[in-house]
Length: 422
Image 1 (cartoon, rainbow, N blue to C red):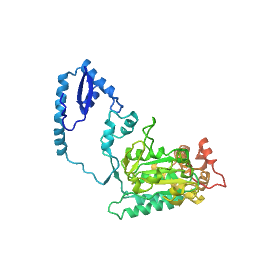
Image 2: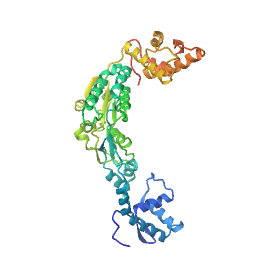
Image 3: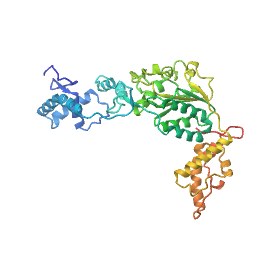
Image 4: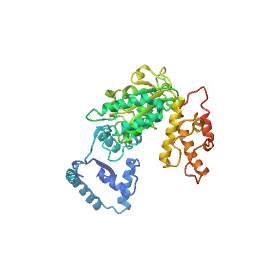
């Protein structure tokens, strides 16, 4: 067997009839696929060897055919390079950020000496991933749409103003990337803090992920778990960047004030790096164990109070107060939900444009999510009650409350502010 290998090949060695058989890895992959081995399955070295041996001993693959395939593969690099050079380059618009060292990741994924844990982490990357993600810009209609959100979330106006101000700044720059500095929303539970952030991510066209820090006891949720452990996995930040197309997704750090304060299992530890753009450019997730550029990830934290948040973490946020809705704001939100339902079901001409005061009052202690469910059913009840009528009106009797909805309303009483349910 020649010891000089053709350029461009990483050879795979197996024992056959007491001799060493060298094959190009690309050929090994092709042979394995011929027997319908799942490409996503983590193949052990011994499994690959057994596959090739069985195909040669009991299948229809002869040494001559193997030699022919081998000769074809030795000619492939030059042909492939010529074909790739002749292909037109894709016309990509926008600014792409190199997030992952994809070359090292692919090498580790092919490393026959790597542990199953390492392979499991590396193979989460999709085939054809080049490690780049698009830095998404502010959508053209974003400013108009954010005004609509101010109607739906009137008590969150200061946060929406905050986001709007940075989008206005972005629009004056050569590349208007969607961005705002880390922000902490302080306010009582159930008033729409998380919901409004999800609405912003939807408008911007970027993915978002909520991390419940109240139930998190270690930094692995953000920074990953080392592959030395059997249940190793990457953290939220790497997952978001790997599985989505944007370099600037949103991470929602829910209940930041309730995170564990244990120095041994500090879930906030990775934030010291992630919340600073300079250090986030070389963020190392413990499972991936490679520097990744997480400097464009956006962070919104929520909390009931700031007093339990460590000062080094708190200093990295802009703090905004979010108040509970007033009765007037609750009425405004209810009417807004009703109007959106009429538009969604294309029945605005059939129903009265405004809900009556008794109907709004009946819904006063419910969250917007429950209000939407009740009103949607009320539209159907009103239609059934007056099937032949040309104009319909929702009355309090059309509001049918389930046990869950009654429980939701029981969360509030006259002494508590109106708000949103989680």
